[in-house]
Image 1: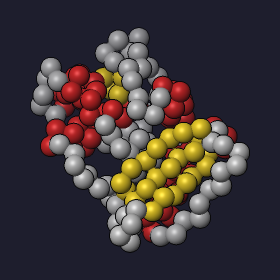
Image 2: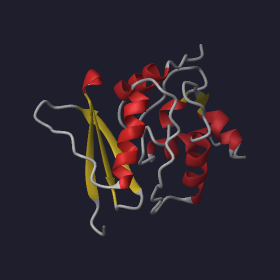
Image 3: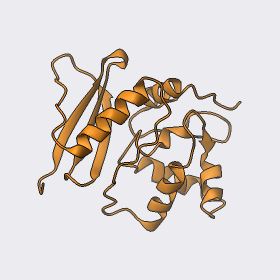
Length: 162
């Protein structure tokens, strides 16, 4: 598949639409947004979409899911790739600070840069940047909006520090 394809997954119990695009081999991006009544879910048309849909169903049912899907890193910087790999090690239902991630990748003092990498993460949920919070326990930011970050942490039963 040369032209990117879109896949829409509905989470009606949270009024959430997960929109993903891919090239048939790897995920190019994921977006979270409010679910509109007029939108319709997509049937899974390929193995990548079937795997993503199955993982999302389990995730929103409260199961600890480690998304093991191929990702298209495209124009990501080496720092972003390293930070995103570290994010994938944060266990389901737990949170870490931006400073923790910086230390985990050997870049103490780079908490703001980690925040930038989280903000540039094209795969929310799949690469769990929602599990990263400020050192004081506040949510920090989230590219999809704090409403969705709170929701994802609530789905996982995460307890915020402080």
